[in-house]
Image (cartoon, rainbow, N blue to C red; front, side, top):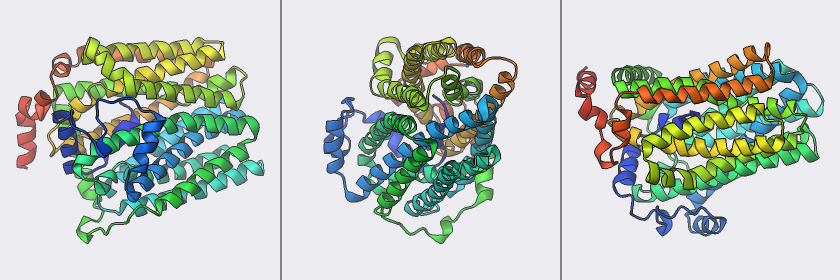
Length: 475
């Protein structure tokens, strides 16, 4: 998915550190990473993970544990809250909820971006988690006292989104402070593995809590995970921040405008962004708010929602670990990106018209596999092609486009559900996503670009379109 999670990581960070990291990963890919683990070893097993984590320094181990607990909590909320809203306010209520949350994220991510390297990340994580815990406890009280109100839940979700964006911004960048450049690739791989396991465990844990208990009890589990994360975060070392690095919103706004301008003037980057924008309008709801509506329409309980989202996460894990490398080796980047994107849309259409919960689970697993395999293909290429002087700004513009599309999608779902059944809407969104992916066929020079090696695409935009960057740098 060229969707929000990967965009958030790229938008906010230290350009210098990320550039070094990407170059070393691409050009020295055969070297060993943190703890002596080879990058060619893609078996993300629990045994390897346990042994590797035990060898880590205390600060890094504390961060990885904090990160995994936050991921677990956020994915639990992703199951519990839509299910609560769907059960209490129906399909129209969850559509309004999804749209409101998407708009909140549209504001939250840019607001968090300027903090970058200007705020102590350990403290940023702790403060953000404390705010999320406060929201979680309030959720629990509202559910326990049966005081459900859609405006109240949406207001709490907006506060939660702001706090989560503040935390996620620091989570995405703190590794550069805890590790040397040589250790970064292995640690990033380890973090991705932990997140993938949390991605499976979070929905299943939430589904289990809903199945054996109540919404209030499940929200209690969410709050407990956040509390544990705060405890672990206290062991992450704090670093002083020079006063010269305090937040400068004017500088951030200038950088965003520069990123948008450069993105629009590079034909391939412009086309890539437009296609991703249209795809995400339909893909986002299909892997988001339409899932709880579909499960509820089938007459299933909350446990099935956890199973469905767990299957989606399992597919993402399999695609990340095995899919992209194997498929690219046999078919090439261009065919894999185009083919799997189209197949993901078809799988979502199958989920839409399926009447069996087992078919829904299987379809979501296939969706997750295609999503991870497709989104990873070309990601490093695209990052390396952008000159380091513009990388953060262009990714900030990409994130902004993703957030706008993420707000439009749920709004369209809400309008469509007024006229059609969820089966029809879900199937239509899957087919529209598959059709939109074909737009990559018309992106200028994309096939040529994805056929190049990592070494050949470093600063490719600068070499192919020097006037765009020279003009901007001379101002």
